[in-house]
Amino acid sequence: MSGPWITWNVRGLGESTKREAVKKAVLHVKPELLLLQETKLNDQRQHIVETWTQALRMSHAEVHSVGSAGGLMCLWRESSIRVLSVVSDVWFIFLTVMISNIEQPVLVGNVYGPHSLAERRLCFEALKTHILNHDGLVFLGGDFNAVLLGSERSSGGVLDAGDEAFQQFVQVTNLADLPLANGEYTWYSSRNDGLWSRLDRWLVSDEVLLSFSNISQNVFDWNVSDHRAVGLLFGLLDAGPKPFYYFNHWADEAGFNELVEAWWHSAVYQGWSGYVLQQKLKGLRGKIREWRKGRGAWGVEKIVSLEHRLQGVMEALENQGGTEALTKERRDILEALWRAYREEERIWRQKSRVRWLKEGDRNTKYFHRVCKVRTVKKNITQLKYEGRLLTTPLEIKQAMQDHFQNFFRTSEVPRPWLQNVNLRKVTTAENQLLEAAFTIDEIWEVVKNFDGNRAPGPDGRIVVSKKKLSVYKLLAKVLSVRLSLVLPGLLSQNQFAFTAGRQIADCSLIASEIVHSMSSRPEGGLLFKIDFAKAYDSVE
Image 1 (cartoon, rainbow, N blue to C red):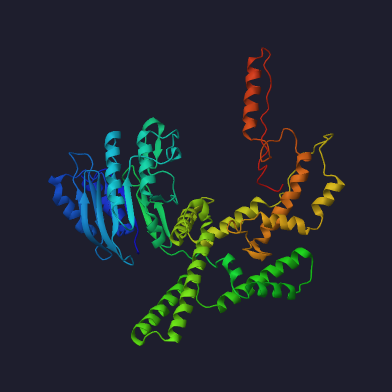
Image 2 (image 1 turned 90 degrees about the vertical axis):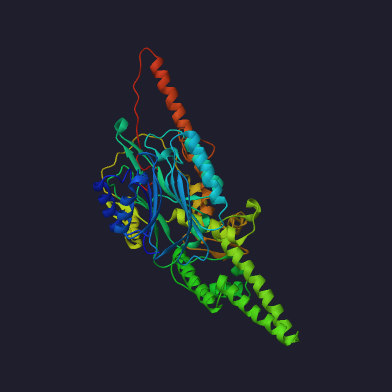
């Protein structure tokens, strides 16, 4: 789809000036689908609707306002969206549509949530019925007059009963709330020195996330309404070269382990140990990629090829009879097909980082869904850096690199010196322990406790003995075990944060007790609050 899908509470289209401003904004964005709430147009103003929608060159369906309150309108471009049916109520309009590249009907809902709690609950119950009765993709946009989190209101606080009803509705229907890429709030009121909330949004089913490779939710600039328009953007994201990942099922492939072991022992590099390890890993990555390309089709492509071959063999068996050659070929194809299915399941289980024995599901579609939902929710499509909004992957990568390079760069500034302070130091024996060469026992202990399906390091994964893990993570874990033997003697009794057996919340409790004690003493006291900036975020 080339254009965005937009939902917008326009807060009235009765005035010609307002209609013209909204039309100008819509023509500038060129949406394929537009959902409007609070049009405030009753059945006596039908001529206005017809004229306005013709100017936008969009077809429409609407729910008239009750007096001067409410009103909904859905507009779409027939060149890309074919409407099969329309179901409407005072609070919502549901369109069942066909869109390009999607073979099954899609349900699109336009919602304006009522203000009263009783009506809101009735509204969510009706929405739930329509959504759960639809088998396929679901898009639900609108002004829900509720939030999902306390942080979605500038005033913060706990959720009220209406918010909890909305939250329960989202959970029951299993709809995904995509993060708002370039904003925080969608509604503003000047009451009480300014109130901000995220009342407007798109909710989508998991099937939507599986069907579109890159989908994001953005807000548009403030306009004539006190609500911002919220858009769903569909498009391809070119994030540059893909990183190398090791898949666990490769270790079960014939000849793979022998290939890795033979190459590792044959590769010779000169230099210090860290450099040699780095070069071997880079070379091994290239060797595995060559092996991977030489295997031909794999994953879904391999399954489709095998299924096509099986269909041909079955037709030949039906026409020619059960010859020995055809029977053997069918048996070989079935064996390869089952192996391909198992490989595909293991790939998606590893990508999703979900252990099916815990989750109670051993289904490739389930793992695929978990992986896609996580990818979409964590995808960074926009980044605000130094007052500029960055939208391309190249700009975002460069901004991240610049930020962390500047953050960790050593700065030549005067620093205070501590004199006559007896700080605990690492002893010679402890230093030798930390710097000693890794032993087989240390490495093997880490390998035994490592989950090969989770959290790859930045270098991908390689094979170590019978387990698969990141070399980066292996080195870090061995060092962390050694540090855990030394740190208890170095840490002050006043150190609470990030320390085993201690709670950072204790700091607040102790400070509160001190303040209370000082305030209850007649002579009072003097209290210094000292912040050590970047205590855990900087190497300095």
